[in-house]
Structure formats: C-alpha cells, structure tokens
Image: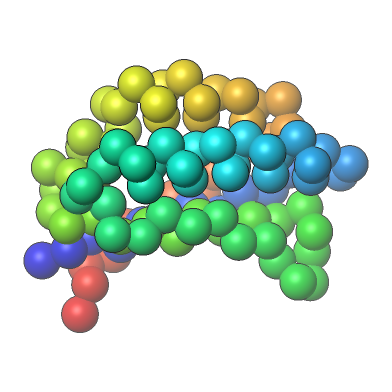
Length: 96
C-alpha cells in the first residue's frame, strides 16, 4: 500500500519568493532522483499566502525512508529554514 504525506508549512511574511525557489529546487531533485516517489508537490494557500502544503505519495515505507535519507533532501531542505515560521505539521496516510 502506498503512503501519503501532507506537510503544512507556515512561513515568515515576505519570504515567499525565497521559499518557493527552494521548494522548486527540492521538487526537481525528488522527481529526478526518487523512483519510489509518485507525487511531490508544494502548494500555496489561496486564503493565506504564508501557508503551504507539500503533498507527497510514496510507493511504500522504504521509498518514504529513502526520501528522508537522500542527499538532496538533507542539503536542499535546510535552505527553507530561514523562511519558516515554525516546524512543519506532518501527517501520514494510507492510500485507498
């Protein structure tokens, strides 16, 4: 069974451009290097421009774990830190 992940991220006001640049870099790296990832998409709230979600689907637990251990996640992900207003709220799901 595939695994879904939804991470809600709040960013500091005025940092959208920097945050989105890193998000695009990370999306490209995940898509190019993680065959077990089926969906990896950042989306910005229409109601609150400081709220983003990352929608992710992985083929299985091994693919999810590989994502967290990947070089690109470990090097690109921290670049989001200066824009973030706190820790992301991450939820895990079983696909149906």
